[in-house]
Amino acid sequence: MNESSGIQYNDLPDELFTAAGFSEQTAEEVGFSNYSYWRSTLRTFLKSPLIRVMLIVVAALVAFTFLYPMISDIDPYSVSLSASDWNQPISAEHPFGTDGVGRDIWARVWYGTRTSFILAAVVAVMQVGLGVILGSIWGYNKRLDWLFFGIYNTITNIPSTIYLVLIAYIIRPGFWTIIIALVSSGWITEARWFRNRILALREADYNVASRCLKTPMRRIISRNIVPRIMSLIIMDAALTIPSSIGSEVFLSFIGLGIPTEWVTLGNLVNQSRSSFTVYPFQMLCPTAILCIITVSFYIIGNRFADASDPKNHV
Amino acid sequence: MGRYYLSKLGQALITIVLVVLVVFTLLRFMPTTGYFSKEEYKEMTEVERNAYLRSIGVLDPTLVQLKNFVVKLFQGDLGRSITVYPKSPITEILADKVKYTVLLNIFSLILSYAAGLSLGVAMARYKGRLVDHLGTVYVVAIRSIPSIIILFFVQVGLSKLLDLPMMFYIDRPSSWILPVLSLSFSSIAGTAIWLRRYIVDEENRDYIKFARAKGLSQNYIMVRHVFRNAIVPIAINFPSDILLLISGGLITESLYSVPGMGGLLIQSIRALDNNLVQVLVLIFSTLSVFGVFLGDIFVSFVDPRIKLTADPQ
Image (cartoon, rainbow over all chains, first blue to last red; front, side, top):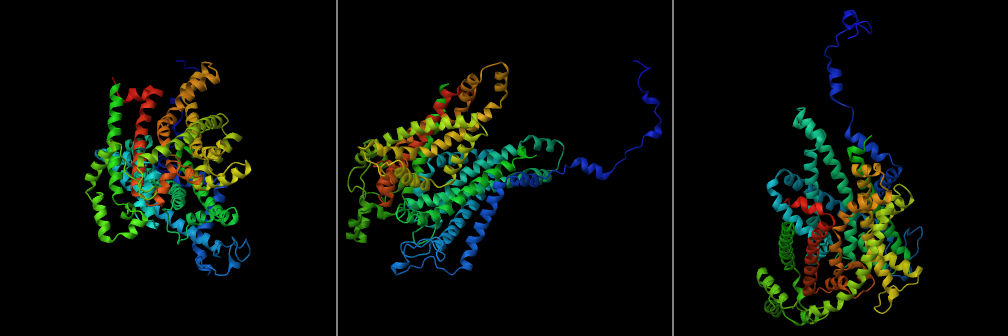
């Protein structure tokens, strides 16, 4: 050792040092980062202007479809007997024109959108709800693997359109038939997906680390697992909406949809298809609204999926 | 090595039995009006109808009916259509229909793999550039807008724009173009977006960086390493696609009035023809289970690791 160079630490006077002591506040600060999962997710999610516009559009559309029956007294079912009211072009009185029997298409579009929204929301809640509950049961009980995998193989091996058609054919076509058909085939895919997420989450390195550090289970569940699962639920629900609306349109096309007396987006689009070449607006207007809804939900769902993944957080 | 195939075959057979049981049981709940043609239904009294239903055996227990169905199936008898083609044997109807569906779908299969694979590769190669953005717009549109709407506008728009027939005629090749295109749209989108993703994932792997560091050419890396690995998850669907050629596109065939199998299912549903619905649904579901099985086999040739990890010797 070279004693002549450098400082002799032992010679430093004690007065230069103060003991840090125990401070609860600084201890807490070391223990927590001010990283908040939801704040980061939302910040990443809302960074894109496209998403902000789409959120506003979707919120406005949803609000308007549910408010419309209250602010307007036009009956979407009222048929006109005088031929002068039939197939009217777009005007101030009829913003989307009228159809072949004089019904106001603007009113029909909003009533139809409302039916489709309710349908999609019921399917989303039931399907994702069942998926989460059964997926957790599956994820925590390895002994049930044979049962769930059996069901999974059986249902997913039948092409979903065929299954949908089969159920709708057997039960009388109607609002609940579509829901039953969609939920009874969709739950198992959701359950499998959530099972895999839950298994992966439980064994994820940061959760293993938390367990090693003796973080209480309550805290792991509330801070690490539930927020992640919640965001998966939101994303999944958003993505089932366009597919449910699409399935309604499909079933209505093959004649197994909601009875044609009801106004739904599927019925509107399919009824106006035959007169498209003569009166294109009768089909274009409902279709435009439908596409705005499905495309927005699809993009919102996918972007939210990216934003909710902690790997993409800054 | 044989064990892998045997276990997959066993799984497939069990699944086929389960699927047939489930579908057949569900089909027992079909509306019984679907066993009569309109005139018959009107002419018969309630008692006669019941007697008729009993005589054709649809009031027997499900398992007995299934046994009868399977026995007849092996004798090459699928029963007779009721309302769509009254009294004609279903085997004859199908033999007539299947060729159009298969022909159309072979063209569409070639087109969708050729276009899907090239689009996927192009999107990954020029990631973040114009091709990638356009491709993404295409995929989002195909996946979020109900296909009936897209296919309808394609039918109306392109037939006017390119001066092509709006309906399908057996003897006019130009009328085949639009149905083939329509059948391919969604599989092009599926293949392209997954391939892009697998390629991008694969390119970030260490072994690719190593290959690059060794000085291998970009083309060699892409063809021999990246593509070879990225194609595996795509290849698993290939046999299914071939088998499901027979089911055809329900919507496309119906829009263009193609006299094929998919259109037939829709026709038989609209006409409430129980026998025909039953046969078609069972055919389509069995084929798709079999397709999944063949997919597992096929992919084990494309990627030998799958077989080796599944059965260590």
